[in-house]
Picture 1 (tube, helix red, strand yellow):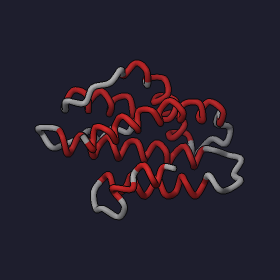
Picture 2: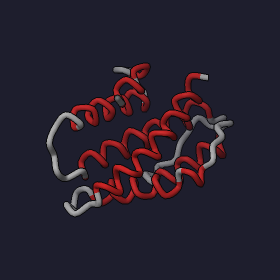
Picture 3: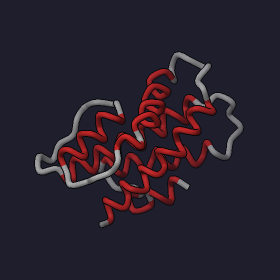
Length: 136
C-alpha cells in the first residue's frame, strides 16, 4: 500500500526516496505477525517526516527544512514555507500520537497499538494530500 503511494520516489536519492524505503518496510511488516507495533510506528513516523522534509526542501523558497522530528511542527513549517494548505487541526492529534509512539519505540513495549492504528487512518489522509501537492 505505502510502497505504491511512494512509487514515484523508488530508489531516488532524495528524502522522498528515503520515505519510499520506509514505505517498503511498512508494507513488509503488514505481512508479518508482530504483536508490538512500536517498530511499525517508528517507520511510519520516519516515512511521513522524510516526505514532509522533502516537500519543504523542494518547494520552500529557502530550500531547507527543520531538524525537528515532531510531525506537527514539520507540517506547520511546510504550510508556512510553501503554498501547501490543509486543515492542520484535522491532523494535529494523530500526528502527535505518531510522534510520541515513535519516540518511545526503543524503550516501551506497551504502546497503544489501537490508538496508533487509529492515528494512521487519519494520517493516511494527510499523506494523500501531500502526494497530491507533490504531483500538482
